[in-house]
Length: 372
Image (tube, rainbow, N blue to C red):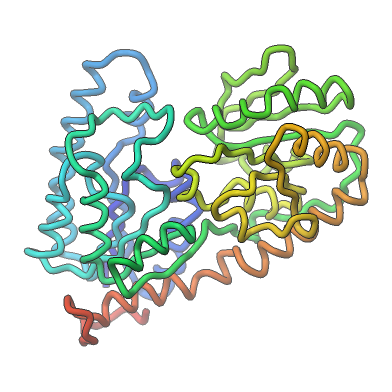
């Protein structure tokens, strides 16, 4: 049995893939599946998109579109196609239509983020030439099963499909080990993300400057090595797979600021879960999926206005026992609800359901071999 993961990015490079379904590849293999990871962006092309120069980007994107046609051959030879976001990040759902209507492959559709909206500050290389929301709705409606990661996306998906499962980003708790000691000489406030999301951290520029002046805290930023705050000392690091957990583990209080924008309603709270998985007390914006992950004052804290951020962070900076209590409660939340072990049956059942349901939603017998 073959499962064809049709995805944007190379393996282990994009958090939206890496801390969702990619973590389950080995479990699929253990159940007898051949896993095929089929990407649109090569690693080199994705790096090029963040560099100056238009000609090289356009040629690279054109070639990526041509190569993407090869996914149809792979899909035809597979038992299930697992599509993440879209086959090509522009234009109508041509390849999806062929997979669904001509090849008639069972399709599991996984979506995180409201990709049919223009992301604020986005450097999307593709122009908006097509109704992207219509494209996403077509895929949702015709997939055998839809996987979403937030309540807002679940509501949208259930308008179009009866077979919907909500699975958050998840944490491999064997890899993410909780800290044993919360005592430090200097408290570090930290954030992890990428150059595309680091503008959100600038919502706290004044807060972080003030807290560093008052309490001498360190500020650590992971994922945008160019990040800086005027008037503050910031340690900015690039994201590195091989040292990700170690780099995160040096944070004493995790930060997750977000604006009140519709785009944010598609975010799964991944940063918060990474901090919490390591037993790091977390302060986050009260919006979207965050409201389900955290109970204020129990396993984390919400903060919205600058005054709230200053008040909550000051409490945590000054109170070692509070940092330890909140950190341990956050770790327990991840173990109970957001671990790979807990969520594996949901992925397993989504793929099983796609195999068992026919195009009209009726149960069918499909294939032999894999024990899924």
